[in-house]
Length: 323
Image 1 (cartoon, rainbow, N blue to C red):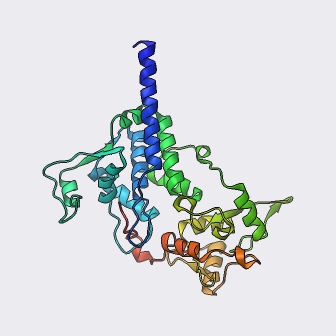
Image 2 (spheres, rainbow, N blue to C red):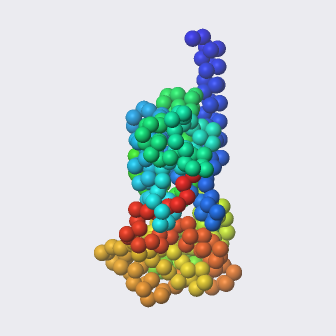
Image 3 (cartoon, helix red, strand yellow):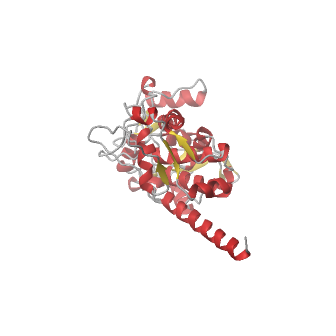
């Protein structure tokens, strides 16, 4: 290969990578009629990127994907009484331009629906995966795998969930790669309004004059249109920030009362304290100024989209939005 041919190939590969990353940024996230957003497609992409990384394969059968993807949906999707379904993202991700599904005349469609029946996907062992030439670029470049995974994480999940998601899908990604630029002014205003004190437990540790372990938690995640404004933030210690983002508790919009998930439990003092606070109808320690209190719309979003309201018996049936 001449140097000119090599340069042309490299340029073409760079263009493929750039287009793929752009498509990931625009990836459609299904919104149900009631306004709930699903992260099923992002989870499928991350699962397949892990497959590229560990198995050097950019395609998989539905039988390979169904169980692990449904497990991920149950863990990171919103709660519902319906069982997680992997066939929706497996089939509909092709509308985003970088995913292909092997079709067959033997596929049996659902009545009145464009997608095939789950049983048909299983029986025919239908294969899907990253389209060419994207698949070739991913297989040849771990850097592209890392960048793609980072884009998906930043676009679909709050920062407190990155490590959890990576561990669950099996992706090896250096944590420092994931550091994001949080709005410094937002953090500064939230800590000022709450006097650098956790609004849940009252923790206010300092090292010298600097607050330690106090964070500005977004109520409605930036990934889903939440704003960096004071009414969309609450000062929390790192522990309660994480518990808030995983849905272990929420704050009732009408009176700022703490509500703890029926699934949350623990034998340690911190877990017991949170449960007891909710049982005693404890409320969030809000700022002195009414105009800086958490906005009811944002709290209602968190209660609907993040808070795990179901009982333990429903923990394996947690999402109804799949595409």
